Structures are given as structure tokens and as C-alpha cells.
Image (cartoon, rainbow, N blue to C red; front, top):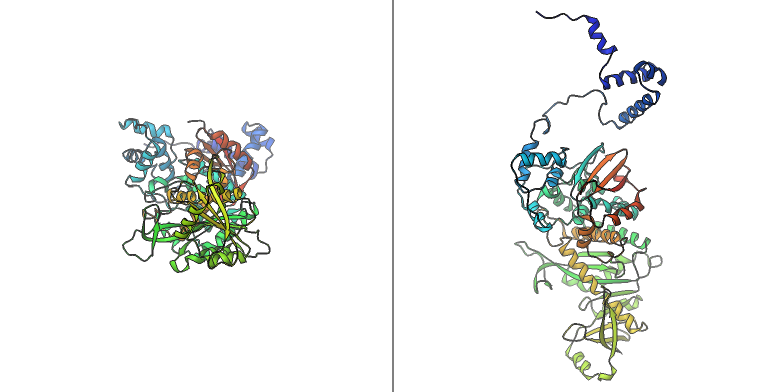
Amino acid sequence: MTKTIPKQEFSSYFSEPDNTLHKQYLALRRFFVDGYTAEQVANEFGYSTGTVYALVRDFKISIRKGVEDPFFKVNKTGRKSIVQQGEIEELVISYRKKYYSVPDIKIALNGLGINVSEGSVYDIVRKSGFDRLPRRGKSAKNEILSSAPSKITAPVSKELNFIDESFSTQLAGLLCVLPYIVHYGIHSAILESSYPQTSDISRLSSILSFVALKLSNVKRYSADDAWCMDRGMGLFAGLNVLPKAAWFSSYSSAITRETNVAFLKSLQTIWHKHDLLSDTINLDFTTIPYWGDDTPFENNWSGKRGKALAAMCAVIAQDPHQGILCYGDTTIRHENQNDVILEFLDFYYSDEKTDKPLNYLIFDSKFTTYQNLDKLNQRLVKFVTIRRRGARLVDRIREIPDDQWKKIKIKKSNGKSRIVTVYEEQTKIKGYNGIIRQIFIKDNGKVKPAIIITNELDMPLADLLQKYAARWLVEKEIAEHIDFFHLNRNSSGIVVKVDFDLTMSILAHNIYRLFASDYTGYSQCDAETIFDKFVSGQGNVEIRDRNILVKIKRKRTLPLILEQMDNFKELSFPWLNGYKISFVPDTTT
């Protein structure tokens, strides 16, 4: 027999709440609907007046954000979430079988929208009978993460909704680069460019996705688990996670050379504005091999492999003082190779009356012809280059008396110096109208003497040799692009147009140079050292109250990072909903 319950007992549920949330709801209803004062509400429900005002304030904030109803749960239709299905243990076990560490597993779960603590992950791993992983070096760990077969699909990339949340990331230091993108106005140059965008991912987020990969030293782009589920890398671009490999290939297919040149030109305006370009530019060629079955490219000499092979020839222009790269081109063919130097001048000058002057071009032998050297001289551009060494010049060097050679000290990039033996004279060369200054150099580390020619007739010999010695640094920058920024490694999972890839490599390189310039003792370090010392490392991110709090795991350079990041604490980030970013040390190591 069913028990009858008096009606008044049910009504007491609404008039005499014993649930805290229920009581707060009725108190707020009195305040907003019935028009009670805070004092009246406090007297009826046993609150202090300050508590009532706090309830009203928090309620207004919650409603304005529109994240979820603060009192009533909304039943969502459709398939239940992974958490409700109790599949977390299965996910943790599947990642552990691929030798993921506990922090790695947490980061992967965050990418799937599952917020679980490292302690919970550790408990699952321990109860499942897994032993502790052996200590692994960075390279061994990266190899495991990148080579593991993926069985779990990463979430679809989309614009971040900026709800209050927290997650972990493998690259907390990557977010320390963001202030430089805003401070120098690089984000504005991207927004004003003609790079494509989609309905789901904006132009700025698209380009920053490429930059995030370049800066993060992801050597193999095909393993989605390694970077496609890292929420920190997604946050860098204003996304939940970075797009999949197929998206990167598809995106670059719509980009033209003209778009890249216009973007490099807008970046050059930024470099000039901040006095990051001097009056000297180093130019050099590099070879980007082609590994396909067909051979649509010409054969070009590869010094790294010591032979000619099917490849694209590219040119890079570098400022020797700041290390900024201002130009790159991969569309060079044999028939136009000699005129690349003139094309660079056309790029550099949009208005020769207002643009900052370019006084010196420094390049290697076989970069251009003597006729083009004459054109440079007519445009009042000084050049310093190596002359091809013929039999007559070798005989001329032998004829120079020993007492006419001079000893000159040249400083190297590491602060040390080197003494070379030199002799200079003035001469004429075929195809060039005017006098050329010719310098023979012995003891330069080569078996045969080097021969420098220039139209700079007044600069002291030691200063001139020092200026050319800085050109050797551009070869280091080219090697860096190949090794760290993976200019030759697009055969893995992402097939990107090479000219666009070079443009993104140049952008990433320059961002690292801007970053490194603020750290005394590290300004001359290469990209891989900057990544290891500052960018690499785990951390936790909290988004709340219109602020992004980045908790960086403790490392040796953390005090330097926090000190520098304090200079940018008032910066807001347009693609991050106008939020500010704060950096603090994490409470765990």
C-alpha cells in the first residue's frame, strides 16, 4: 500500500531549504525578483550582508560568462562523455603501453577534454601493474612519442572558447614567446597579409599553428599524439589543439610566391622600425634536395652531401649584427641565378628615398657576374665578395714578396680571434667599369689563399676583413634552418610548399632571435639551444577571470624567464580574447 504524504510536507522543500545551493537560489530570487534589499535577504536566510553582496557579484559574473547555469543542470542529449562511460582507465592503459610517462598521459587526456590529475593517472598506472619507466634522455623520449602508433583520434581543431579551465602542456615555455609576437606587432602583419583562412580557423591562428610547430622542434610531423593533443600548443595559436597533418598540407597548397614576398616585406618594415637591420646584408645560396620519384628540378650542388642532385636552389638574406633573416626565395633557376642579387635589391627598396640605406652586400663567389657587380656599383651599393681563383691569380700570389704581407687579427663569433696574413692591391676586372680593391688572404684555414674583391676603397683593411668574416655566420643560419626548423624534412607527414615553408622558417628564426636578445649570455645561441634552455619543459595552464596563468615547472633558467616575462605583464593578446598572460613557477617539479 502506497504511503500518503501530506501536501504541506512537500511545500516545505521550497520554503525551508536545507541544501546550500537551493538556499542561495532562493536568496538571489528574493534580491532580483522580489526586490528585497541585501539586509532583508540576510535577515531571512541567516547570511551576513557582505555574504549577500558576494553571492550577487558571483552570480552576475557567472551569468555574463554564460559558461553553464550556476544552479540547474542541463541534461545534454546524445552520446555520454568518455568520463561518464568510465573509459579513463582504458585510455591511461593504452597510452602507458606506448611508454608514455604520467605527465605525458595527463597532457594527452587534456587534449581529449578530460581533466584528470597526475595523481589519479599514477594510481591507475600503479594498480594496473605497470612498473616505473626507466630514465630516458630527450632524444629517446621524443623517438618513443613520435613513433608510437596512434589508436586514439585527437579532437577537431577549433577556435578556443575561453571557458574557465586548466590543463597541462609539454611546452609551457612556448607561451613565453607570445609576448614578442605582440610587442613587435608581428600578429598585425599576419592579420594584414593575404594568407588564406577558413570558417573554422582564422588567418592569424593558421599562421601561428605553423609557427608553433617550427618553434617546438617537432622533428617528425606524422605522429599526431606528440603535438596534436597538446593544449598548450593549441593555446599558442588561439585553438583548443593544433590542426592535423592533412590540414597543414592543404593550407599551404593555396599560397603563392607573391603572398610570401608581401609578408616578408611587411616583416621587413617591422625590423626597420625597431632598428633590427643594419646597413649590411649577407647573402648565400642553399640547396633543398628533392626526394620524389620524378625529377622536375634542376641539379644543384649540395655541399653537405658533396655532390650535385635534384634540388631546389634557395637564397637567404641575413643581417650580420642582429641575426635577423629578412628575405628568402626558393624559386631560383639556373637562368636567373645571377640576377638574384638585383631582385633582392628590388625587394629591399620600395622607396629608395625613404627606406633606410643598404650600404653593403656580402656574398660568396659564383653568386653573381662581374657585370652585375658593376650595376651594384652604379646604384652606390658596396659589395664584398670572393673572387674565383684562376691559374693567373695563383701565380700572382706567388710573386708577392714575403715582406709585403701583413698580419691582421680577426675576431670570431665566439669572442676569440684569429690572425691571418693579407696583401691588398687595386686592379681591374673584365665586365666591371672602374677600380676594384683586391685582397689576398693566407692562413685562413684553407689550403689555398682566398681572394676578396670589393668596391669599398676607403675602409681600413682590418675592418673590411671583419665585415666579410661575419658572412660566415649566414652558413650557420642555413644549417640551423635545415636541422632545427626542418626545411628538408617535409617528407614525413606534412607536405608543405617549400617557399612557404622557408617563409615560416624565417619567421620562426627571427622570433627566436628577438626572444634570445633579451637574455644576457644567450643572445648568440642557436635555435636548438634556446629551445632546450627556455622553451622545452612541462607546465600547467589555468584560464579564468580574463587571465591566462602559466605555471612553468622549475628549471635552471626559470628565474631569467620570469624576470623577463614580468616586463610584458600588461600586454593583452587579441587572438586570445584580449586576455593577459601571467607566468609563475609551478608548485611541483
